[in-house]
Length: 196
Length: 196
DNA sequence: TCATTCACTGACCAAATGGTAGAGAACGGT
DNA sequence: ACCGTTCTCTACCATTTGGTCAGTGAATGA
Image (cartoon, rainbow over all chains, first blue to last red; front, side, top):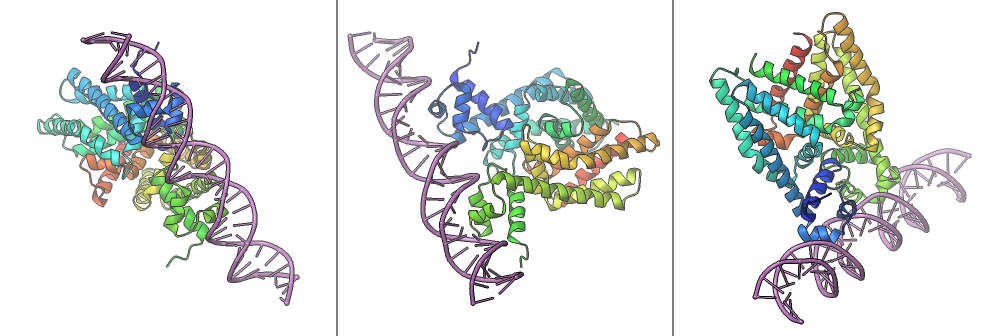
């Protein structure tokens, strides 16, 4: 049923737990128990908890990169590209919310791993900024602060994946429908900021 | 210099640490050391760490309530009310980002304290929803999903206060200017969603 | 003046934490 | 049959964690 290697299984489980419960709230013993192995097996593959976190962050970074690159390959220039990317990111947020949770966890101010993720995402960020600025110069997008636009989109998508309790308090159950609704809302915002 | 009672000082320091470093990453010993007192003193005022967290959440909830109510008293109906509230919340995010961080920390899925905060905020949420719906019915705001609108605003403001590292990665230093910029962006979004 | 309450502390403690050392098992290559 | 490698385990360990207990000294009130 599970044809993953132990190392891969540890990585997956750690991503899930770090991303939802947090790094500090995750003990190696608990992680091992969930996997049906001993803590020392984890420490064999990842010599320390910090190294494990680094590996988790690296893997997550790669997942994000492939997701985003897939979207950008499919989509054409202009508004279509933005829409395709947002759709793909929402799909990721729905399928693997723990990845977005990890992002939130790691980007805590002062986190040493924040830099690690930043470095990984830098080329993608630069690419997005370049894309937006080029579209603006070409007149297909109106002038706006590319960084702020990207940050708004980021906040929204991470929020969708992680603020389940808040949503619930607001009477928004985490259904597929509400996700679609929030996606539409973000697209509307981006459209009004970029196109008209 | 510091005319606060020990109990109040503990509450403040705990709010700061829980809100920025997280609950699990905060040890009572470290908290006490920062305050120049002994851990047992903390446990004298708050019989357990969980009780301390509950007290922190209660205090934060009260702070939010007074902030929001102050804003609503000052402002008139219609768009002015929304703008006043957003401005007040951004000021709070700038002055006490740890409060927003605490919100994020506590609203983790499965958190037992999430419910506590939810209960406290419920009347305010209901009030906001009522306000929006009434304005819509009066024709001053166009029809929209009040919950989604509030959630978007929430995500943005919490993001402003907590996603410092991400902002920095995007080339947005956490200056006053960038805050103003993001506030304008949120107001623009809300305006387009509610007014035109 | 004496008893009581309040705020705080030092000495402990059991449990959990991340981590080390070393002993097998499983395995393919020679 | 033997060896080296890879992987997982049992047995420990030092430290840190939240928390208990028994105080101490200073106010406070009768």
